[in-house]
Image (tube, rainbow, N blue to C red):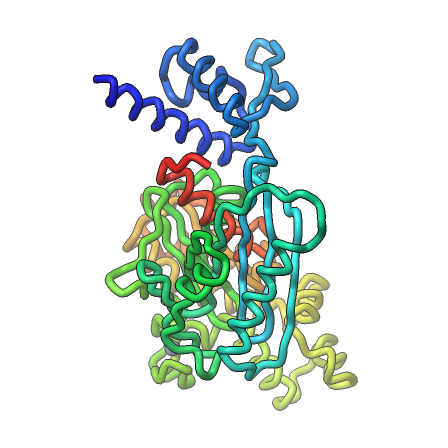
Length: 403
Ligand SMILES: [Zn+2]
């Protein structure tokens, strides 16, 4: 009986930490409503958590009657975590405290074609520099999360393959970093990390069943069902970019013809611009590139679309409709609550979201779209590294570990 009681207590304490982590701060009354246990128990549990230096009282909130209530937050000095994102040309690392505030940041850029051993050394260097970035006393480091750009065996902590890094094969990243830093390491796919960050602090915070579509060089997608990632048998779920859109379309890097990312992605935009230039298409944006080739870039394209350049607007609307046709099938098949558009092209905002929404609503079952939300990702600054850091906290809170 005593054992059961202490299990319940540990469980409630872990749940309180998790609720506060997800909500930023909560009053005791709000915690009591969410947990559905007696107010006296909440008073006792929060008192213990404050004594253990896990929670602190900070500021006031108002209840419905306008009465001021003390708010509880996680103690920022209780711990810190590191989140790292990397790709074939750069590494971005950040250290956050338990209030989710960045306390140190480190970036590296390197030449495309840099080998895997050098990238591993730079990953280690980035983490060392984050840990020792200055002499101030840092909260104890609880773990490191890595957002991996390629395929991951997350159970074994192995980074299996990344098509853009030449010799990146079966890299035992967790083992390498655990040996170096003697701390828990968590590895997750880059797109899953971005969705995790959105689901905790961004556009996806109100949804349990959602799909994140990452429109960047290619298309990545991540699926969350009942708050957990859906991986598929080999962790390959979410390869939306390689859904065939037009079997007579151009050949894709995967070897098939007409994959979706051949029509909707940053690389597809660059191809379309070059194609239009070759065919003498007229628009002020294209004329600007004719004058200065350096102006050909995704940010300049997005700017021109926002300034209503006809060529850019037409291309964006076409991409929105094309993506919509594929997402309409996904919606019929999976019935999500929300579709979140992220990545480089998400900066297009409503320009791409509106044609996408229109097509999905026309081509999906009315019942499946009635309550479906379409959102643009909200976390602009290093969402994958943010998500990777949250990965550590999520594991810690989920596993009821006391830090
Ligand atoms: Zn493909």
